[in-house]
Length: 102
View 1 (cartoon, one colour):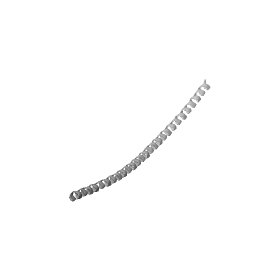
View 2 (cartoon, helix red, strand yellow):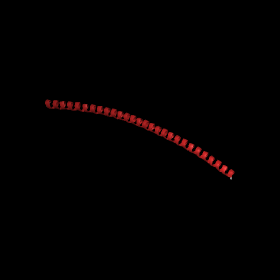
View 3 (cartoon, one colour):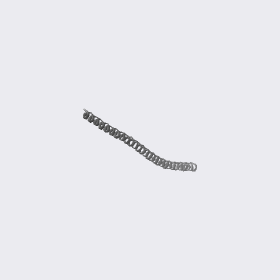
View 4 (cartoon, one colour):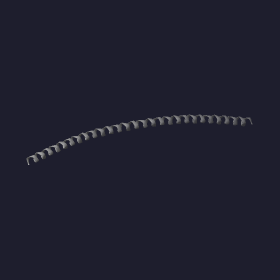
């Protein structure tokens, strides 16, 4: 009877010790999972921030290029308008001279 009782006590003690170790491992793994999730969120935030910065730089470059192209086109249009005015003035002068001669 003593052997049976001592054997059961030994089995109970071993069972409880293994059970408590498993709980510790679960807590450790939960902490590790939380840390990993935290790191993943930080990395995602950093990646998103970098992507926004790159997109902003790209937009700035496009705007600058468009401004330069527009400026050049406006200068050319202004020159063409000036030339057209000069040619029209010359044509009016020639027409006036032709009328005077006639």
